[in-house]
Length: 176
Ligand SMILES: *[C@@H]1O[C@H](CO)[C@@H](O)[C@H](O)[C@H]1NC(C)=O
Image (cartoon, rainbow, N blue to C red; front, side, top):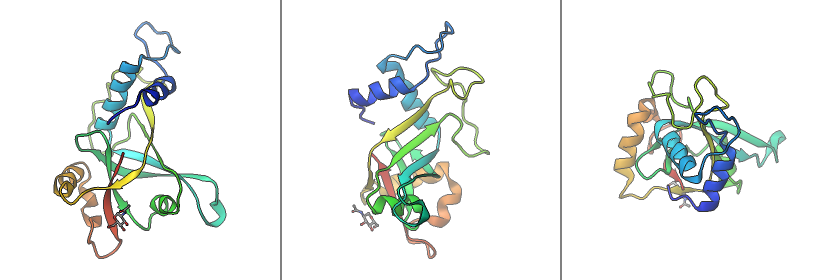
């Protein structure tokens, strides 16, 4: 994940600091915010995909749906785009997209270490959460086998929806 300084500053200002000394509102340094962000994206595996509706009674309104993702090494979330899903239809119609991830965004049956750097014990609002800006790009044929295996390691039940399945057309994307 190649963070630009401006992005990191935005992250730093949006993370509620949880300093050991108990001061609630001191923002973390840019370096610490980057550590929190990378840890969060690496550990969790569910993200809200936020888009703007392009048709129907919700036209012009923001909508947000949870999707599976996996961090497969470079920090750019890998997602399985189901082409008929609202999020991807909105994106294909020109909507911008952001991803929201917070501590606890993983399947119920998966154990993920809840102790995060920068988190305040027993406080959801005092724990890392992030909003990522970027765009979806198709994964290349070369990287597909490795990314698919990595994705399925986190989301076994997604095997029914892999590209080529007979029900819904789908393809792997990265959110860069
Ligand atoms: C990404 O891949 C899908 C499925 O193969 C294809 O429909 C779409 O046009 C591709 N998008 C781009 C930007 O190449």
